[in-house]
Length: 154
Image (cartoon, rainbow, N blue to C red):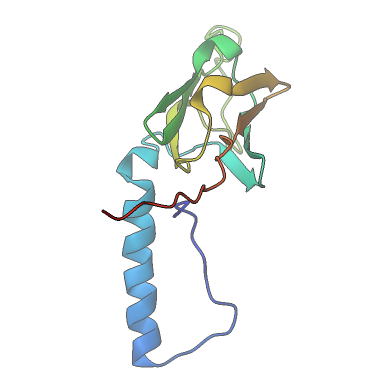
């Protein structure tokens, strides 16, 4: 199962084969997550994805957004987190002589798409949003043990 998370080798290898592998990995990583994961507004929430035998857990940090401006959808094996962080309205009269010295906050629409394994139970997804953190827990389906059946030959 490919998660669409970039992995890099910790030990550098500077040969031509290594360079080719890195370029191939770059393209593979880009197309694994898909262009729909990239944000046009220049920002997107940071996401942690964890898994174990029982469930897949996703945490996304989305500070400064209200729950009503957030959407979480699952289509096939693609989980999409989308929303809009709205810029605060300014009172032009009060801020007539003000200018930004530093402006690091980002506003606008975003969407983040994460490919999930096929083994999840789509009917039992649990999600919550509190203090700017979105938490999603998706249990795995119980897989029945393989049964051995003897087939009689005729």
